[in-house]
Image (tube, rainbow, N blue to C red; front, side):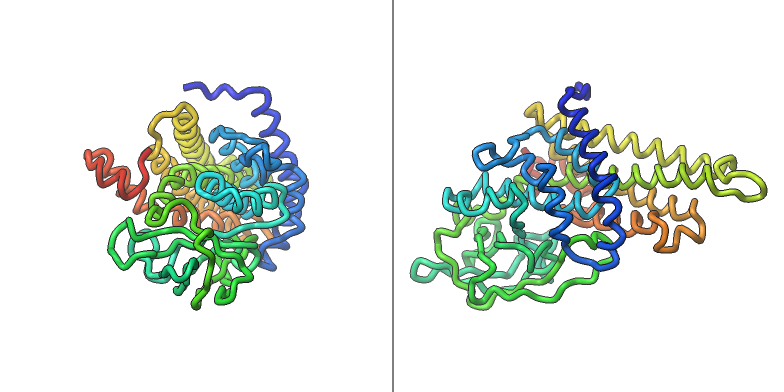
Length: 391
C-alpha cells in the first residue's frame, strides 16, 4: 500500500483546492440561499476540466481511471463547495454508465457534452416505495412495436429539469427478482416525460432535485442500455466507486469543519482567554482531527485496493460509513464550538452540518452499509455479491 502521490497528483490536488477556494467558495452562500443548479458555476468547473477528468480521451476527457486521484479531487472540491463536489460525482456516474453500457450512438450524442460541461444528465432509480430495495421498483417499460412504453414515478432525481436526458431504471418483465430490471436512456423532450416539483432541501442545495413521472413515454428500443434484464446488475456494479467518492465528499466537509473550528477557537475570547485554550474545546478539536485522519486513511485504502485490482466493495462500504459519520459529528461539533453563532446562517458551520447529512443517506444508507459489511464478515458471500455488487 503506497499513498505516495505522484507530482501530477500533488499538482492536481493543489490546483483544484486553489480553484475551489478562490472561484467557487465565494458563490456558495448565494447558491445555497437561492437553491438549485448553477450553470455559471458549472462552466467554471468545465474550464478546469473537472467534468471530463474520467472521460475517455477520444471524447475530450482526461481518461483518469485512478480512483485515488478522483477521491483527492472530490475531497478538495467538497472542502470549499459541497454541492459542486456532489454534482461532479453525479456527472462522473452518468459518464461511466454511458461508457460501460451505452451504445455507440449514445456515446456520440452525449459524452462530449457531459465532458465539456455543456450538458448534464440525470439518473432515476429511487421511487416513493423503492429506495435501497431496488428490486421492488414499480416503474414499467413494456415492449411495443420497436419501442418501450414507460409508466411510473421516480423521486429524488438530481438535476431533473436541467438534464438533457435521464437514465431510468425500469421493470421490463412481470417476473419478480433482479432479472426483470433494465435501464433506458430517456431524452427530456419525449412526450410523456413529466418534470415534477422542485424539492426544497435541507442541504446539497446547489443542485436541482425533482420528481419525474412517465405517462406512456415512448422511447426506441435502441435506447436500452446494456442488455434487457441486466439493469440491476449494471446499477450495483458502480456502487462501490460511488461509495468511495461519497466518503471523499464527507472528508472535504469534515476538513472544512476542522478548519473553521480551529480558526474560531483562536479568535473567540471568553473569560479573558481564547476558547481554544480551554481543555474541553481542545479535546473536541483533537477528536475531530483523529477521526478525520482515520476516515481519510480508510477511504484512501479503499481507493488503493480498487486501483490495484483487488476486491474493495466491503472497504468502500466501511469508508463510506466511517467518513460520513465522522463528517456529521464534525459538523455538529463545529456548530457547538461556535456556540450561538454556529446556529446562524451568516457563519459557515451550519451549512456543513446541513450538507453532510445527505452523505449518510445516499449511495446506500449507513444502516445498509453495516448490513453489507456484516454479511461479508459472516461469510454470506453469495447474498452479498448478488445484492450489492461485490467485485
